[in-house]
Image 1 (cartoon, rainbow, N blue to C red):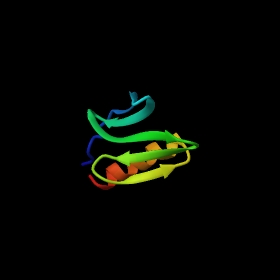
Image 2: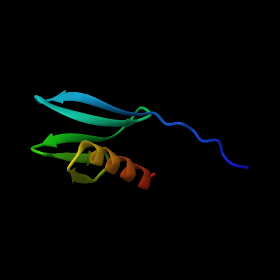
Image 3: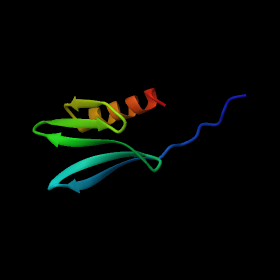
Image 4: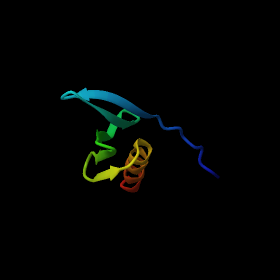
Length: 72
């Protein structure tokens, strides 16, 4: 018997920190990472370890989701 797929709420929330706008990625109510714009790139930090630099915001969010799913 196949399991019923469950939907998961994913949110990208803007937050002002030290005069700079960052994006925080939440799955359900858990913060999984942050994306900070730097020059023409995006510095990405996974809560619990791991940093990455992406060229676009979409790439940064995708990396966070992949790393989160990998370590679950």
